[in-house]
Length: 78
Image (cartoon, rainbow, N blue to C red):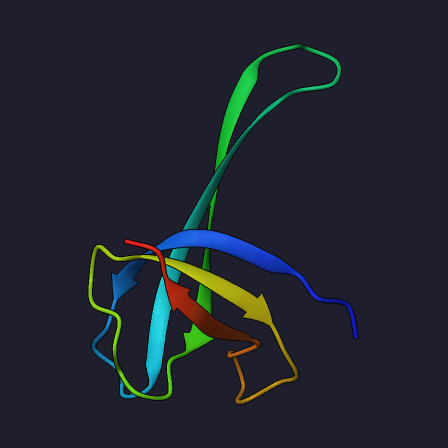
């Protein structure tokens, strides 16, 4: 399995053992050369409920845990 790791900010910790992580990226449009900002939200599994809102976390792609969860929280960076 491919090991994909992303860094983002925890937006919600209301669910048990689940965190919503927001990841933003900036890129340029190929044709029009305009700088664009894209934001995505990922549901990540946090087994011990350690991370809180505002924490910067590292998440890793994993096998499906539930209907929406395909990521796991590896560590809290900040």
